[in-house]
Amino acid sequence: MGSQRAGALSRDTRKDVLAVLLIQACVMLALSAALLLKGYVVAYSAFLGGLIYLVPNLYVALRTLPHRAGSTAGMVLAQLYAGQIWKMALSVAGFAATFIWVKPVSPFSIFGMFILMQLLGMVLLMKSKKRFLKL
Image (cartoon, helix red, strand yellow):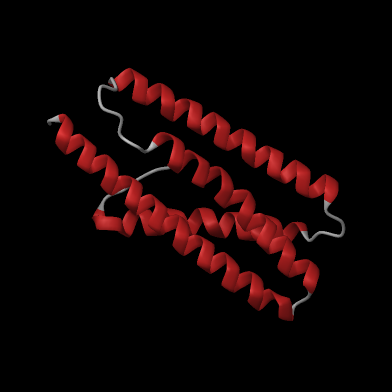
């Protein structure tokens, strides 16, 4: 496969992943707004859980998905590994910061939204052009 075609695939993948993240952000905002009926703490806890998921994933999408001409497979793989490590570190930092600095907080809402975002992301990526993309 030529580098021009690989670049097109990379742009398509990046576009698909960013579209999925946008849909997830909209779902997170809508669900957080709906949870205001259950209470302010539940709503902002769910919002924080969504942010803890979205921010690291957006970072990885913007950092590792652009195709760079002249990149070898090893370089791309190293970028993907580094991106995943940073994604985990940012997620851990997000959870830690939330549980340390945000009081009161609803752990069920935080983890519930985080898990919902993961499941929604998997479903949307699988339906994206009938191929499975993993971020």
